[in-house]
Length: 331
Image: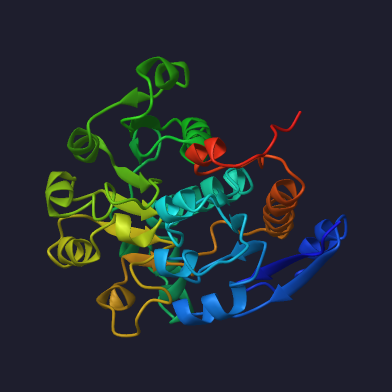
């Protein structure tokens, strides 16, 4: 069998051993890289049979320079780093991993919600600064009976809904691709986006970053929200219009924000969000646990192996490519 070349465009992981273990099934030349630009990706990947990608740009310009590529496997659920149309046109399979961190992200969203609701971060800082005064946390409202609004209602927000409901929280959702019957079976009411914003005490964002979702939470939505409401984002930063968020917080239109993602990452040091005591920010860690990282890496690598051995991967993004490639369905 021909020796394959697989390149990792970029990675933040301490080890790539899980990928090495998966690739040991084939005779693969495995090449780690740390690309940041299109030119660097082209140079590293132009003769690769398979690509693993974290954040480096896989644009049309890059894809059209790939001589042998059969599969681009994204580390994660989202795939906004990859030009899907260009990949499909060039007969390249694109894969992701849709189920590796459902508990982690839903747990983190709930943790941000609890931290905001109970003023945990603010009060911790006050105590460590020598101030012991519960009044500094006011107002705090009982969780039971409050409403959580989920923007997007896929696997992660569905898991979050169950966790919130266990606390006596009513859950509503906005998702144009979700059926009312499915939502109802989970005891969740579907609403239009602005209606959700007006009813929710917590708005948790879970939409993927697409052209249609870019900046979908903006001034109109913040104007509809309650002054006591909090917004949480564990999806992608640009789904929220960050300038509109900053205005809403500065003008007191909402009570606070819990963010695991921001418009630019790492967040810029002069971003006003960093100086707001009613904003909690974590460094895009919601996906992470020791277990989920290994699972992500193994499944991403397995997607590459599937394609290189003649099979449609378990996690296929561009389904239209199936008509353009000679790959078998996995049994």
